[in-house]
Image (cartoon, rainbow, N blue to C red; front, side, top):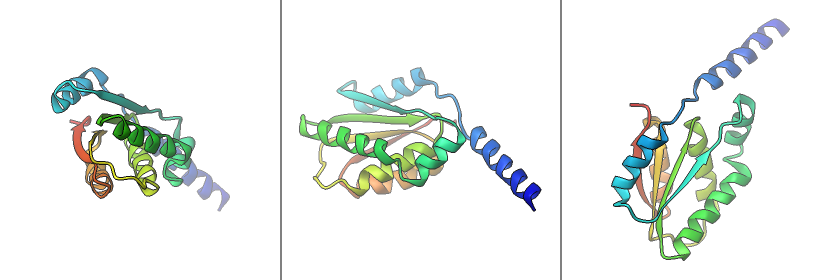
Length: 144
């Protein structure tokens, strides 16, 4: 039984590591600049810290990093608005961080565009979370 649990744990760690991908930031930035018409673009690249750390971050909806993301969105809104590009080499991380940031967002956000650069399968989930808070949404597929 211990052997089976050990094997399953190794498989889950390996499969989580495989889910990361190098993001071509030059291409992503070019597409983001076209979407935003070259105005006020901020970027947030969420680092992947390995399978276990990523899984823990996802389990707590981004934790403290989600609070930082929420603060960035509120600050951007309070300074006249703008665009925020969110990406990561692990496409599940932005989903968790954005979900966590949206949970405690209490102010009306009406002049921010959030651009998620990642995997299509997360885009619809993120779009629903973001638009429910009044934030405009755009998507860049980094897995083409």
